[in-house]
Length: 461
Image: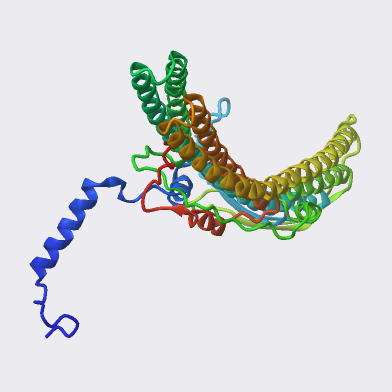
């Protein structure tokens, strides 16, 4: 017995299967039941974006280079050997030819014990491996930023198309009303011409908006790596974003100077340049290695007169340049110049990051205040448009008043959507500036979206 529903029959397996099939058919018939959201776009971009995938492969290059540099300071063991066939001919002594099969086998060891330039080179590559890690982390932040920018650019374009459609509908309706009023003598031809002008302008605006949608959608599809058939999830109103913490631009700039990936990479780049200067100068120093070998020789393999010998060798090898034609001196000067370039590049990066962080902070903070003001402006503009339309129908307002009110309301919708886009992008850029942009931020922004369906813009009367 079913205790939760005592008056209902228990569903059999065929009944459950039919229910699932019906649900699947309904979803297939209505593909826009669930919108394509930001989190889906980000996951698709991680799998398909060529720039990000290239950065992942570049990380493997840095790791491989580190292994190669470590091999230079580790011992090298070599095995060589050979079996030969020789023929010795006597031209004048009329002696018979002799045939021999000599063989040899050598095992050798070489271990550097004093090679400072090789050790410094290994340190350089180790620092480069850290740069590879930072590059991959920065590439992931860049991917998030590009996905957010492309996604909300496409959403903004779709939103503006919906507003333009609503404006066109309202303008057409107003034009029809002006024509009727003119036919019955309640208005002048000027009202009809003004309404017709607005109608044609609305048509042109819609055409441009649709072109922008095509371009923005194409950009988003190139990032995620496939066509998007579903509607995009829109921003739920009101947009609830948090104020940046800490609450001053200077504190964010200080954090960026410590945590920004580009600043860290520039600092490591200067460290690599400094090590390169040291390594070039260390080429003048002697290099000492331990060498050892054991060699087996056989004079005639598989022969009764075969003579076998074994030779053991162990010792130290020392090498040091005496005269190189000025090669090392030129390499040192070149490395010192590149070190100066790296120092200036680090300084330029710090200045650029500070400016970008300050701009992102101002964009995020001012954006929140702008959104609040524009939400109030949009509400007031809608009431004004409704009141002017009612006043026109009652003969208390003229046609131009209605047209101006409708244009003001449409512009308020455009401005609010643009402010929402700018504020979201400002917050993303701010987190990226301090190296803190990650998957959780994408999920947080995605939670602000209406993922069930694409929410159209509010209609203009």
